[in-house]
Image 1: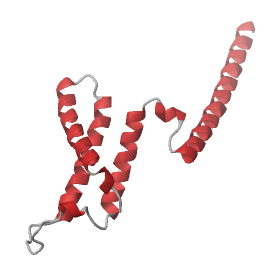
Image 2 (image 1 turned 90 degrees about the horizontal axis):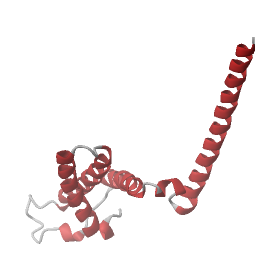
Image 3 (image 1 turned 90 degrees about the vertical axis):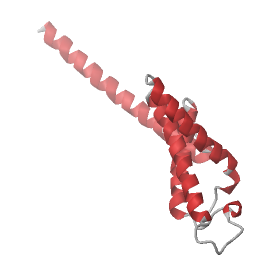
Length: 141
């Protein structure tokens, strides 16, 4: 009989503990959401800021690729009558490279033990980050 009471108390304790933890997690989620709305990032995001920013850049550049209406004038050819001169296609390829580079950065985080795979991803990330830096002022629509 004593053993059953102990089990019952243990079950009740853990149910109450999980309920309280759930409330505090939900409360933190509300706080983090409020921080993101107010300042664009939350305290939780700073713990792994590179991954957070990579995700923001990936989704933002993908959206820009889908909704873009133009491209930087620096990508225009001097000879506009030339059929192979497509600044828009070149811009789309650059945006795709940026997305691929930052996706590779996120994948590197998950593949910490595979050195050879990390080297390939690091090259992709460096290429995408270089294009992102070079055309940072052109990332608008």
